[in-house]
Amino acid sequence: MSASHLPPGVPMPPGPRRVLPVLLDLGSCGGHRMVLLSLELWDGWADLRFARFDAGGGRPLKRRVPPADAWSVWFDDDPVEVFDAVGRGERAFSNGEVRLTRVPRGGQTLRVEVTLIAEHDPLRGSIVVPDG
Image (cartoon, rainbow, N blue to C red; front, top):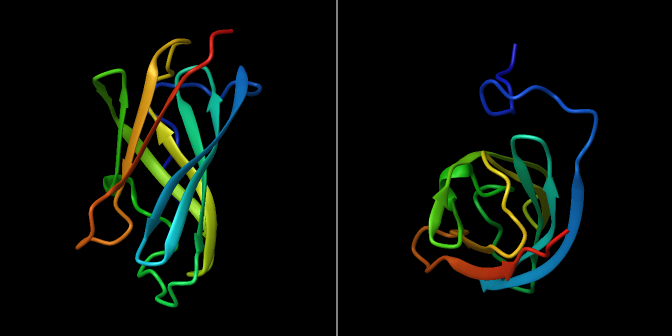
């Protein structure tokens, strides 16, 4: 039996409230590029969808998906718990989602850092969450 991928006490809603296109290129590390694709807003949590792909580095990553502890996320300057990070793919291409325990409000700045390779600086980026 596997553990729940939802934060404790959060019921499964019928669907997301909103899906916001992001397309934020966080840059490259060790020949691998990380792009945030979208932000799904659910009742009680949010998912950041991403793609990570080989950008000519020729060095496969140790993991297909950066684990939850490789991610740091803030809404404005307030840290947000990363509950889970899951995905699929191979060492040259993977995609997945990072589950956050809270949902950002419109107008907040969403900041993200992710460490792809331990001995390298994390990749960073930010967006302002649209109102609506």
